[in-house]
Image (cartoon, rainbow, N blue to C red; front, top):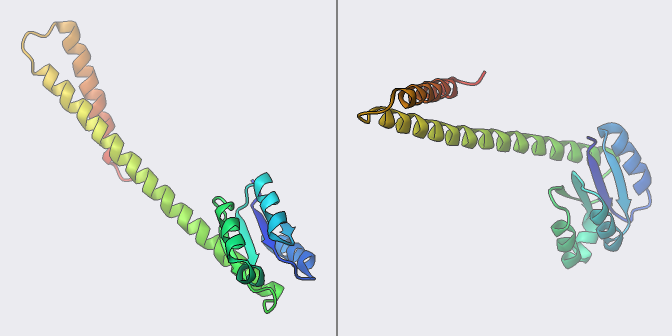
Length: 166
């Protein structure tokens, strides 16, 4: 899946900057010259990165807030294209993408840890309940065998969940 960027600026060399940005980063870059065009594009495609020209942001703060609101999960980046050359834009975009990758990695590890914890709790519950059922007097032999099998499965799964990932 290709990462996409929306560059919102009315600078004269926007096409050249977008082309170089795409070449250097592998991003698919769309350009919008104003807020209305940007909102239309944001409604048609999911972007990884939305870059708003500082001048546009300063001259229309409410419009910029609306752009950020419609940007979804895109990384918001405000650039002053009047004083930034293409190399700086590329550097800032790479830094933002790197931060996004780090944040996604942290979020994935946190989600995995939460799922692991939930699984451990559920398996512990299965193990405890099956052991309590096995302790009941006068359990029919067929049920005893099934409960023992369930307890063994839960115990094995708990041991596997306790092993460090690697």
